Amino acid sequence: MQTMTLNDFLVWLTASGAGIVLSFVLERIPAFQALTSAAKSWLTLALTVVIALAAWAALTYIPPELMVQAAPIFTVVAGVVVAWLGTQAGHAVDPARKL
Image 1: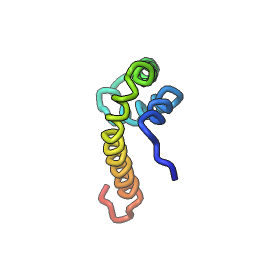
Image 2 (image 1 turned 90 degrees about the vertical axis):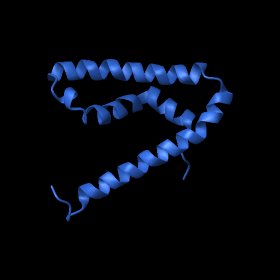
Image 3 (image 1 turned 45 degrees about the vertical axis):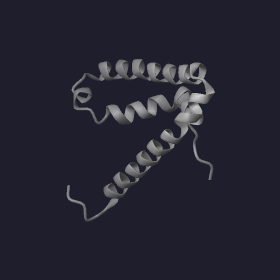
Image 4 (image 1 turned 120 degrees about the horizontal axis):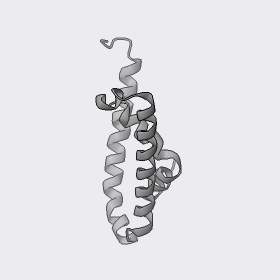
C-alpha cells in the first residue's frame, strides 16, 4: 500500500478533498449548525474554494526544498488523524459504548 505524500494530499485538496475535509470539520462546530441551510451552503462553498486555492498556491509557490522539509511533519499529523478517525469509528460501532 502506498502512503499519501504531502504533494498527493495537496493535489487531492485542490481536486475534491477540500469539500470533504471542510464538511467533516464544519459539522462539528455548533456555530455552523446554528446557521440557516442557505448560509451553510454558501459558507461551505466559499471556504471550499479558499482551501482548494490555498492548496494550489502551496503546490505552485512553496519551493520543493521546503516541501521536502515539511513532509515528515505531514506524515506525523496524517498518522495521528488516521489513528483518531480509527478510534472514533471503533467507538461508534462498540455495542458497549455509553450514549
